[in-house]
Amino acid sequence: WFWGMVTKSTARTFDGLDQQTQQAYHKSHINKTMAVAFTAYAFKDCMDNGGDGIKLGLFRAQSYKVAKRMVRQRVRQRDGSFRATGEITRQKGDLFLVDCAVTGSDEGTSDNPKFSLKQLFETTIFPDVEKLVGPGGKYEGYKVIFQDDNAGPHQEQAYFNFVTSYCREKGWYWKPQAPQMPHMNNLDLSVFPCMSRRHTQLAREQNGLRMLTEDQIWDTAKSVWDRLPSSKIASGFIQAHRIAQRVIEFHGSNSFLTGSKIHFGVRRDYTETATGLKRSDELLLPPPT
Image (cartoon, rainbow, N blue to C red; front, top):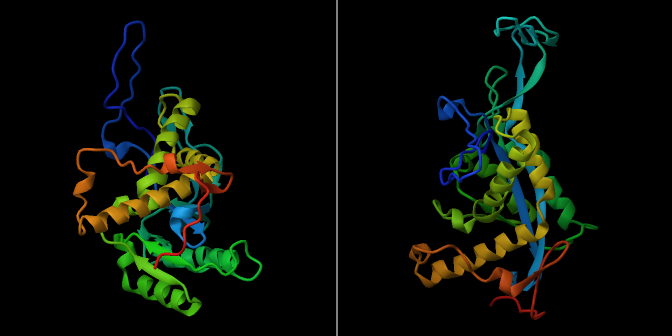
């Protein structure tokens, strides 16, 4: 989720600075927008050799709904109230986009549309990956492994059957991660926290303390995504890989995360490039046995 207003619970007051405040009656009154992101990491022989961070896409969870009546713009009246007396924005029967819930394969109805991950994979993600690794692609011949985060919609049977059978036909791999392990997922571990901080900063630079509308939230998130460096994506994958190694060392436990921040020497060991990361010592490790 990206929010239209984020408060700072650790903010402190200082002499000489005027206090600025934001108000909302309830958390449910704060606008928010759901985004679905896909990233990839292309490497040769061993993940520790470094590689390219790839942005496959950021998608707003929305779908089309059918208007049941004509809708006009709201116009502020002299007494401060609003009345729908402005220009016509929609006619009855028109299609318009609305934010909606993410599902595995259910596309919903015209009255209650849903954002189907199956449809997204079928029409966008799988074809885009095939272009990258297929004949003439930038990563022609690379082995494709999808890491699924095992969230609720991803466990829907129709969705799971589709993605696994598609990958099987292409000679690709579909590997669901263990549940309740966000530190093993590049998006939850690195990309979304980075985007969230930058989204809040950019929103305040552009809009001050005003709450963002859903469209403004999305436009800001898309701007942050477009500026996200490939090195950040590659760094997240390497960090997740090193965390996985520690999980194995601790026999499946994540107790090594307790009481400290997650640092695994990625900045120390790698140098940023225009497309991702390379090893600072310039060594090339062989494939794992």
